[in-house]
Each structure stands twice: as C-alpha cells, then as structure tokens.
Length: 530
Image 1 (cartoon, rainbow, N blue to C red):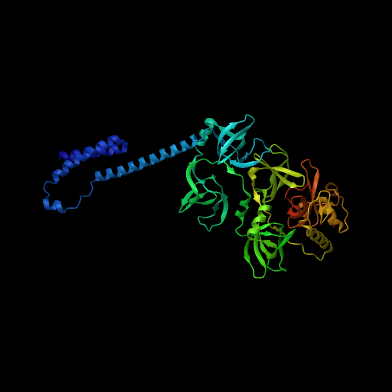
Image 2 (cartoon, rainbow, N blue to C red):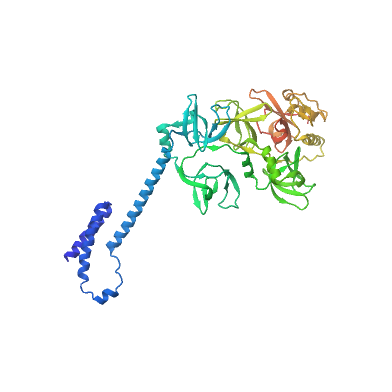
C-alpha cells in the first residue's frame, strides 16, 4: 500500500512537472518515478516461474513509460526545430556579414548600373528594389562604385541606404534563393523540359525559392532545372542587361517576314482569303503549321493567320536576321501612361500613350526611360509602367476597307486604300515622295493631292483646314494632329478605321500603322467635306 501511494505521489509530481515544462526537474522526477515503479514491479514478479520468464513476451510499457517516451519525442522535435532556427539565423547573419560595406537599393522599379559615373554612361545592369550590393567606393559626387551579382559598376547614391540601417533592413531580405550557375538558363512555365519557355536566367542571377519538386525549383515566374542552380540563403543582387538573344524566348519556331514593306496575313491559306493583318518588314512570328501548298499558319503578336511561305525566313536564317533587327524597346504595361516633358513626376504631362504599344528607347535614366514618339519628338515615362527589353516587330491587325455604293464613303475608302499602298516606305524630312520618302505632312499632302484636295506642306497649317471632328465621330480619311510639349502641332496622321492610323512616323520606322491614340491627338479634321 505504501508503495502504491508513493507511486501515485510521483505520478502527480510528474504531471505537475509536465505542465511547468521544467526540463531538469522533469527528468529528475522521471528517475524517481521509475525507481518507485521498479520496487512495485519486483514485488509483483517474485512468483513468476522460471519457465514463464523464458517464454513470456516483453511487457507493454506502463503509462508512465509511454508518457516519458512521448515527452522525449516532443523534446527532440523542439530541440531539432530550435537547432534549425539557430542555423537559419546564423546563415542569414553570415550573408549580411559577407558584405564589407552593405548597400540596399530603395526604389519602386529598378536602379541602373552604369559603366561610368554619369547619366550618359552605358547601362550594364539593373538593381531591383531591395537588392543588395557591396559599396566599393564613394566618389562624393553622388555615385557609388559597387559590386553586385557579378557586375561591377556605378549607381546613384541617392537611392541607397547603408550602415546599420541597411543591416536592419537586410534581416527581412535574406531568403532561400536559387543562384543560377550557367548562362541563358530557360525559365519554364511548368516543371518539365517540354514546357513553354517563359524567360531566361543569366549566370549569378538570384531568384526566391517558392517550392521544390523532383528535379525542379519553383520561382515566382516559373521553374528552373535544379541541375543548374545552387540553393542558398542570400539577398537579391544586380542582373545583367537584357541580351538580344532573349527575343528568342518568345518564339518556339521563329519565322521572319522577308519583304521590303508589309506582308499580308490572311484568314485562310489562299490568295482569296480575307486579309486580317499585315506583318511589317522583318516582323517575327511563331510558325504553327505548314500546308502542302506553300502557306504557313503563323502567330505574330495577337494575330493568328496564314502567310505565303515564300516570304518567310526560317531556321538559322531567321535567327540571324532577328539578331540584326531586334531593338531595345519600352513596352507599355498599363492603360494610358503619362508621358512627360522631363524625367520627373513634377514635370508637365504633355501626352498619354496606350497599353501594349512598343516605343524605341532613346535613353535610360534612373527610374525613367526616354522614348521616341515620332521624328524629333520624344517623351519620358516611368520604368514602373514599361517593360524594357529587346523586341522584334510583329503583325498589326488590319483589314482593307471595302468600297461602298455611297459616293462619299467610296471616296474615303479609295483615299485610305491608296495610302496603305505605301506602308513601309521611308521617312524623309521635308520629303513628299510616296515611294522615295516623305515626312508626316508630305505624306498626307501627297495622298490628298491624288484626289484633288490641296493641302499645305506643314502639319500646323493642315490643322487649320477642313472641319473639326470629335474622336467618336471619326471616319476613314480624317486627319489627326498631335502637338509638341509646348503645345505646337508637330505631327499629322490619317485615320484608316478600326481605331488605327497610317502615318510617316520617323526615319527608324518609316510609313507605318499605329493605334489612333498611341499618343493623345489635339485636333481631328475632316478634309473630305461630307
């Protein structure tokens, strides 16, 4: 009886110790409880025969022994988690300490890394917001010489925090990342070598790890093969400037239009098929199918249709041509982006540009891109709302106007279809030749001259002729006028229907089709007289 009471007393003390989670007292009580239980067990075992002792299976663990085992397992798990947490904290601290003079970039988009300290110097890489760098030198003139992501160059010091502030910020920025170990590593949509390529990663680039599956590492934009990355705790660092070769990421089986002006894209593989789009010279697309009678089914931009295979380069010839044609472009990724006169949010908004339009990049300034609108006309847009990458021309949705029975409608159709014959022809300042070259007002003047309408060779003067029209009432053949940052009309285009215009834009692009509000027009005039 005394032994049983003693056993109960120890079990009560054992339960109290479990609730208090006092590990040292808990272990001492377990030892005492075990001793008490052993005394009782010895007394109870005295009558067991020798033969039964030999044949009996091990007795099941008592309640106290099971509790002890359960508690030990819990303690082991807690200890393991504690060790992992400590190891993770140490690895993060080691990452932060690996920077001799840590700098953390504080921008909403990205900061350019330049070859030399100056806004006119070549851009050699980009540091996204919250990326880290080692500051090698402060030139005391607003520039840091830095090392980051295998790149050494210069960044403006205005957008970089340093010292204890940077180290404190870094505590939340060190994460498990995949560090790329090879150049031009495909980023795939799904964890399979047969999956679509959605991008490419370059040597030393770092991507936060979202998850892992057999042979693949998931990152925010897709999947990387685990064979070509190293997993480690790190911070994001600089990335090399986009390469021209990355244009191939967007095409599985690239085809390039081999024409001087425009190639018709048809709804069916036939010369009688309806024209649904035009591919400019050297435009790119994915070849989806090949017919038996000389046609390719092609996807170019948002257009899918058929083109004559005689006018499409494929294979290595297409790739070689693409490398010659690819240009650094700013692709707008928001509706109606403000274009400003200077690279500052305090600068005047003098026009707006539309979503998905591509504009040639003239200059990259930290947080801003200078883009070409037309000849001798440029604007500044924030890097937060454009993707800057090498790109190729692609098909433009377009259908020729059908001539109507109504005389005035028929005249407008004739004017537009005549103008469209000269797509792709060159832009020449002061020119009036539809074949050898014209500027914007020379183009519209020469088109209307064919139909007996006289216009002066100056866009500002043309804007004073005809009758004013609202944008919702535009008809094919109407002229749209655009102004400079000072409000002076400096460009004219012709409306061709379906929300599009044709105009002599610049030396770079010649006579081309654009959306009517690729930037905001200031006047629309009816020159036909109906």
